[in-house]
Amino acid sequence: MFKGKLHRATVTQADINYVGSVTIDSDLLDQSGILPGEKVQIVNLHNGERFETYTIKGDAGSGVICINGAAARLVQVGDKVIIIAYALMNEEEAKSFLPNVLVLDDKNRIIRVKHEEIHGTTE
Image (cartoon, helix red, strand yellow):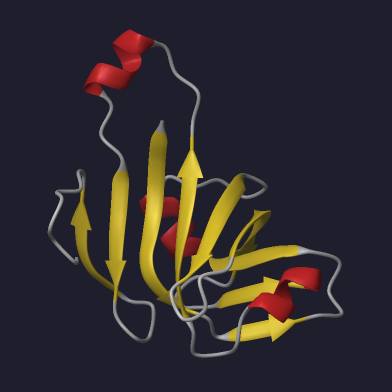
C-alpha cells in the first residue's frame, strides 16, 4: 500500500560521486512517515524517469533533496520529483490506513498535508 509521499519536491543537489540513495531533510522524513534507510520510488516530473533507492536523513530544516550515486544522472537540480514510500499490510490494516502526503513548495517547505488523493486534483 501507498504509505507516504513528498509531492512535487524540488531537487536541490545531484551528487554522482556519492555511493547511492536520496538525502532528504529529516523534518520531511519525520512528517511523511518515511524512515531513514527506507526504500522509495522517485518519479521525475520533468523527464518521466522512475527509479528506486533508499533514504538518508539530511539536516532538519534544510529543504535538501539530493539524488546521489548513479541516479544523479536521471535528474537535474531544480527538477520536480515525487518521492513515494510503500508498506506491506494486511487487508484490515489497509482498509483504515491513511497515508501522509506532503505537498511542497519550490523550497521544499510543506504547503499542505493530505491523507488521501482524489482523481482530477493536481495537489
